[in-house]
Image (cartoon, rainbow, N blue to C red; front, side, top):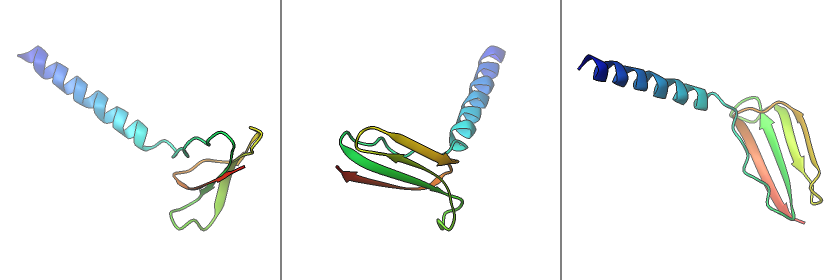
Length: 80
């Protein structure tokens, strides 16, 4: 009985740690489709007042990034 309790406690702690780790990661924009131009802008807050980073994917596959990623973003995708 003690082993089951210890196992359940350990498993619960591991799941809690995994949840906290996933929740604190920056948001990821979805993948850019082939033959599309994609622009992702990351902002400092939910009001999107200050851009702090970005990622641009051109039609030829060139990727340019700047700044930092946050959980507040906009994503635009346009066919080439």
